[in-house]
Amino acid sequence: MSLQLQDLTCGYGSRPVISHVSLEVHPGEVLCLLGPNGSGKTTLFKTILGLLKPRHGRVLLDGADTGSWSPRELARVLGYIPQAHTPPFPFRVLDVVLMGRTAHLAAFASPSEEDLAIARQTLETLNIAHLQDRVYTEISGGERQLVLIARALAQQPRILIMDEPTSNLDFGNQLLVLSQVRRLAQMGLAVVMASHFPDHAFLYSSRALLLKKGMVFALGRPENTVTEESLQRLYGVEVKIIRARLPNGEETRVCVPVTGAGGATRPEAAGEVGEAVPATVETAGAPCVIA
Image (cartoon, rainbow, N blue to C red; front, top):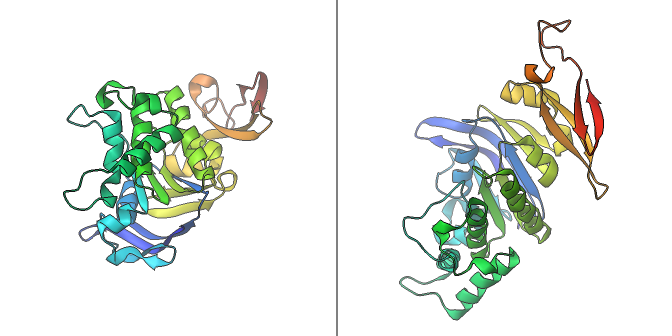
């Protein structure tokens, strides 16, 4: 199933936050949203999920306008993974995942054996079945985020909306979560993911959407849109993008901030204001000079 946004403008009350966004996301794709705080990423997600009504334009799923869809209908197609979640009660992991079946249950109905089997299968899919009887509040942050992904998968959605899924996670847990995101896309899901890390776009996404002040700043393949110039204009900081070869032979790109401490951007030492002084970065065991 494909997600389409047609000239979408959304916001709160009379104040637009996002203006004239048009894009498509297809099965198997990961679209990474990048932008500074306040650029409208979460507002865009709320509109896609039906929590906010568009001020203008349309949200389409396989060509069908979702404006008249009920929350239950949307929940059967769209899965949502928030930034972080701490429940007020010590539920078992399996019970948290079972909550994802709510959209498929009648009012006041209890989960069936089929629902239970689906919940267990999603835990197996994400390689966390060993956590099913653990207390959700007592597992690690990375494990909790994988449980939230499992809960969304239990809805059996066609599209995943992920609002900074690696927020507050350490480096290892970020890689753990994002590797599963890429795996889910390879299984045929369409994924829309917000991130504050440009490297995530290079490593895990098919395309990148850059938002600035509620407007589309750039949209396309990461290597074409996530550039030194675009990041400087987006975040107001200078970066260098270097290429690195992974052990499997694939090539990726890495963003390196240019800082005075690293011997980089120092206007008083450079020939012109903002001119970069060459720095050396170790990449895959060999120095890669960036200038």
